Amino acid sequence: MRPVSRALIALVVAAMSLVAVPAAANLARYQAVIWLPTTGDVLNSAQQTAFESYVANGGGYVGVHAAADTEYDWPWYGELVGAYFASHPATQRATVTIEDRASVSTQYRYSRWDLAVYGTSQ
Image (cartoon, rainbow, N blue to C red; front, top):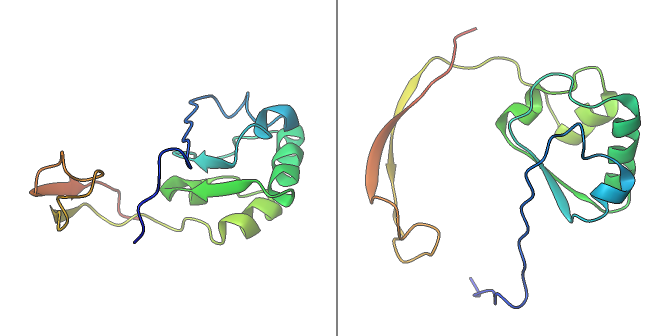
């Protein structure tokens, strides 16, 4: 993997309410929109139209976990996300092991830890 220069990439993270975001002027400022953690019906029809236009014009979309539990009544979004959330498994225990401690993304983490991923059985 080739290292990426900080001069080439600028990461801007903006935390905002979804209700305020999807106006065309607001969305145009971003290269990608991350849906994290969304659930249910989060956009009105005008916001949906703005978001559809944003993606159609090259805007990026990243949907994380519950993004697939969002906008069930919006067929366009269903195509974008690729699938809808069906159910969540019961709590699962896991051990996370960091194999590359030299990476800037993992060097401050413990090398190994146990965790429980909580959910509800359906």
